[in-house]
Image (cartoon, rainbow, N blue to C red; front, side, top):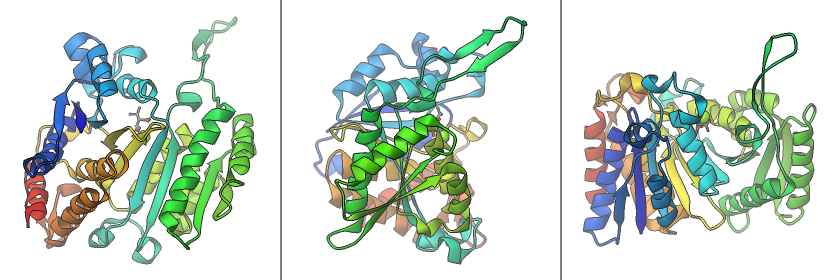
Length: 361
Ligand code: IPM
Ligand code: MG
């Protein structure tokens, strides 16, 4: 099991250290883990003038899975777009063909009070957002800022999806829904688009409807993205799998994270066609709290659980990690972002140690 570890910027390095503690436990027990480190994002730019150094991409390509912290920092804000840390992330997603981005939003009962929504709206929440990750307006050409004849500048981007890009991610969505439903259950896919306005979305809807015919046991519905944003806070439990494009998925997944109390709890998996994957927390590099030992490492640790489940097909280990996180929460231990009155507030490091302790007994 070769894992490329890319800590990145901001709180990235400190949360990745905690996840590596978990991996070290597994390695001591005999799991054949090999970890290799490389810089990405601002760290990549600092090391070699490139947010995705060639050596980092090569390492990631040769590994079975990638563990990533987060990228971005104030000191890089003035760089031209192509040198900014975010480009490292976008290029590694594209370079590894990680088109299927899984962002589960689950409410841990222990954190029910951390959600800003009323308990009855979110209790038992378990939805999976499947975001297409290598297409759409993120990568469409042409794009740029041009000067018009009248001297005024104009910014432009291109939203684009080809049939094959839509159908491959749709297949993943229906397969996930079937798996979640189990033998006799009925899985549901809600495809989110803006087909009342965008041609790209009209094609999206047509192709998803086509693909659905191959999965008669899964219920397909369609929803416009503005309505989906509203339904997510009004009645989030109506959703099972949300299938959507890159930009809509970016926005809806941040929204969904808050249903669970904190974006600091949300893991993600980005998969290629062979289940090779990049695993990272949904949150960003939070430069304002970097180095203070207060960031929540649980999203990164839970991303490892996803790695074990999807890339290494070790559901047993995935469940053990998830269970250890729950046990830690049950003990009343909380980082600042999820702290409630009466709970013990601890730092990043102590949270990592607590999860390790929970794994060992
Ligand atoms: C995410 C982030 C990234 C994205 C940024 C950092 C480029 O917001 O993973 O959701 O927009 O995809
Ligand atoms: Mg985002």
